[in-house]
Length: 367
Image (cartoon, rainbow, N blue to C red; front, side):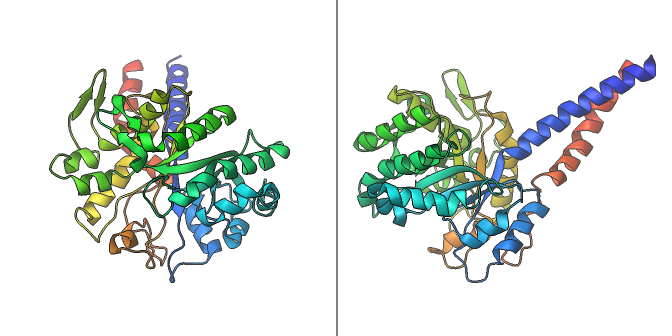
């Protein structure tokens, strides 16, 4: 009986820990940017994803070499419609159907496309992308209808990606709201997302908030190392800036009164060089902690792990300004920039550090 009890407890606890860790692994993807003249070939890049147990990818345009290399890789994909294609897809439904045929149906299901993001960080007021705003929702709808016509709308969700500049108020998070001058743009998109059951993709960078306001935002709060709650917002306590920013988006959506929409963090990262606060140590701490953190949800959504995509796979030497060249998790020669892992390595580390400390005493006490 003693051995039987030991075996059952061991098996149960192992299953619980492994399930928890696999869930954590599953929340993390990495964005595959290509603005470099020294980057490896797409097939080599997919091999780096797989060898490092990175199970999700964001691709900013339907690069055919990357899509071919993704076949049967098991990697889930956010497939991007670049901003330059918005007008054509919005004004011609046939173009949208052809885009879906060429870039989705030609690869599905051997490429596990999970989301199509139609446009990235289009800002409807006061920006070089503002003229594109009128095309975002019609392009989303045309792509969605092309996906729906194939019966894939429950498997492939169509959305867009925004940045935090569309929030007019973000503090405290519970009082967050979208800017009045972008509501006519966003409300219609949110209404579509409610109808289609699709998430809103949002790019969230605590680094830029810290860089722009280091007097009021501490580095520990920005990189997940604050030992205590920094911001108390009613019943919600915030120990890190990432949660506060993400919950501000949640609240801004909720405060429109349109309906419930999930949020996927489609970019988050920290540069290792190039400007104030951009250091190797801060980047490693932020990214490592972010990978660990997203399984736990946020104060406003504690039940929902946060699907998050790290930016970016490689340092990209053709980006500007200088800061933008230093967001990579890997060097162009495919060597890891940082010491942390993404999956199997992390499971081994967790097992050694936590299973031995927590489970073994429990089993001994049972005996």
